[in-house]
Image (tube, rainbow, N blue to C red; front, side, top):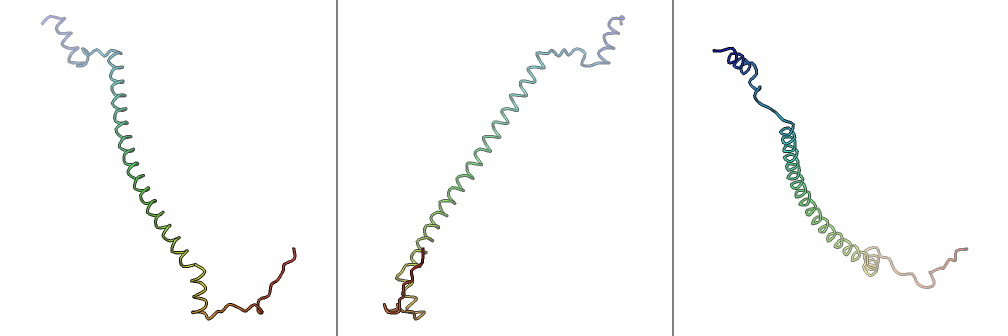
Length: 112
């Protein structure tokens, strides 16, 4: 072997990446590719998160509608239980209360 071949083979053995030339253009392309890939993963994640949150939102809206219907029913029931005729009937039958006569009613004027 001649001297040049010997030196060249020793350089290859010492540094296997000596022949690999990394240009700034290659590094820029690699960085841009990684940025695009990270952006794509971010978009997929956000779309999935948006879908899940929208499903949860729809479930909460349905629950709110059910609570509104139940609230309306309870208000109707409350108004039915507190009608004047019902209160008067319970006062008369269950508690033995009667309406006082006109003679027993006294009007009191409050000074202003």
